[in-house]
Length: 253
Image (tube, rainbow, N blue to C red; front, side):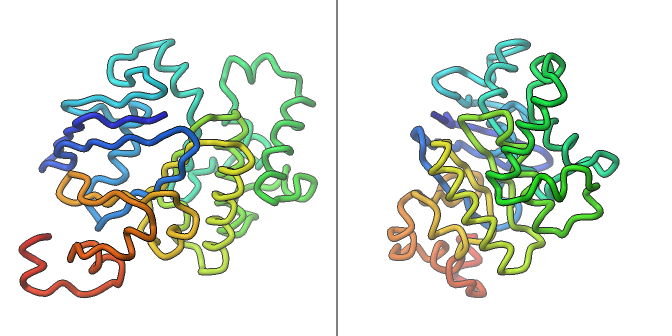
């Protein structure tokens, strides 16, 4: 469903330096790594928010890099994006925020009642009561509820792929667990392909089919959660166990 082909991207310094990764349809994959390793940049290349300097991203066999205009729009309609910190519009109520996830031309042609129905259905998918929150502003919601409204916005357009950028940042452990379970639930109910960029490795391991670790702009490790836990790779083990690097490890990092 998603293929990253020899991706390179440099800003002030190289961020992606030859990323290759294939993600089959229906898989949930966690992309982990230390801060500044290019995780969020990789996620944004998936739908062309950041163009790579070299390489390509294929969505269902179609090049994102070479696609323009309507073709790129068609690709993006297959994808729901869950932004870090939810990124809700402060001046819009929950109904209007969630409905932003419906493709614009479709949204303009929908009766108000159908928009409310679609938004309510999406909110119910993420275990929120539409009747209680549709008219509320983001400032009236808890952090966990705002995260779930962001999830609802991502799924209301019925995507085939969901991209999660640090979905539990800023949440307490209980709400983080709730969000991770929702990600797992949505993957099962909707059959979507899920890519989760996260620092919360312990929280994501129980819900991921595979884990990919970025280091120095490349995929250093990819495998199942059990393989991730069992690997002898010194950097992976330091990341997993939150160990402070030794002088020897700092040379690798």
